[in-house]
Image 1: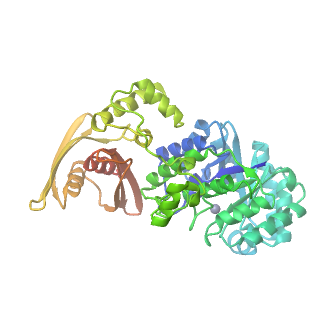
Image 2: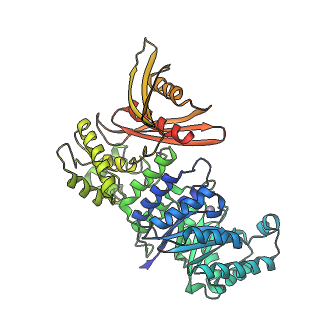
Length: 499
Ligand SMILES: [Zn+2]
């Protein structure tokens, strides 16, 4: 069995996709979740692209200790300097430089000749190498490049000291056998390629990103670039969960393994979808609601007799919660902390105090507290820390023959601010009351959804709102056993970001 590295780019390629932007706290939360998931490399961002990106790459580099943290950089000194500054304090820092090698990109985007491209690669990879030992080079649009020229470009990068060579299918154009052929050709024709990591970064425009990545492994690649739920430019990247579960389920056909903890896949995907304020498509492989659902009678019958009749992997293997009762009103702090550790979370004493208080409050409202409930509490921790407005109390009056009204009281700098408003339903009325208190800027509620965390009438609901003001979109999340309260918290959370 050959060890394969998983390079995750959810925070870079994923985050730059339309509608997928994340704020600082969300990026930190996700980086720590990726570390727990067990990826080898986290591409934390593109440090030079904005001060916000720099700040989050730097913070992630300092916080993450078990995986390599990379920043993307174009082939310029300035980009490389900034990338280095952002990752230099990481336990395992990496600079990831890229330059396009396809005729179209060289002529129209870079306006460079082949020779200029080769020289730039040699100089800039060598420059990055003066900063760090771990340097990855990507030949952007590799799959539409001239093979012989691509081999020359990669030879230059290897000679200059690149320790990982990435071959991206930037526009999602390759088909599997072609991707395999290309990797084999490069293995033969790039001097020293067998001594460094060979990586692929496949886009999913034709739905072939995972297939192309697996074919590249067969041809000798040792690293796959993925993103959680396949987020990324346009149709996205190879989905981490699909690549990892294909390898884990079909060990017989593909003798490779990686160190990802598959039971962390489902919680991590939930975190990503909840940050984005959307739900997984029903039929999304591995993490969609239907991925393990058996509806047809003949299938159900088969699965009841023997799960293997229609199930090639178990829900448990990817961490889908089978919601056994774990904790309740009488569980002590120690039991809660133990369970959290089992789930992969380590909280410091202060965070644990706050979390335990929220656990107690929840156990007053809900009898059985499942892993999913506990996980939701952790993921929602600290959401209002330092927020300008927090929910104090509310009442709502609703009915189908009265106009709905809500009274909302918020806390703001030690003050209590209250407003009353009417609306189409109690949620609309409560949101209107918040608008009055915070003197909300012109905005639109683009999306609103609520989903339950676990089963039963006393289940916690997680509400998500998406607000748009001008060209800015923010999402807010809220958690409560009361759907109106969850919605209000989500709205206030979103409003805090908008303000
Ligand atoms: Zn990409």
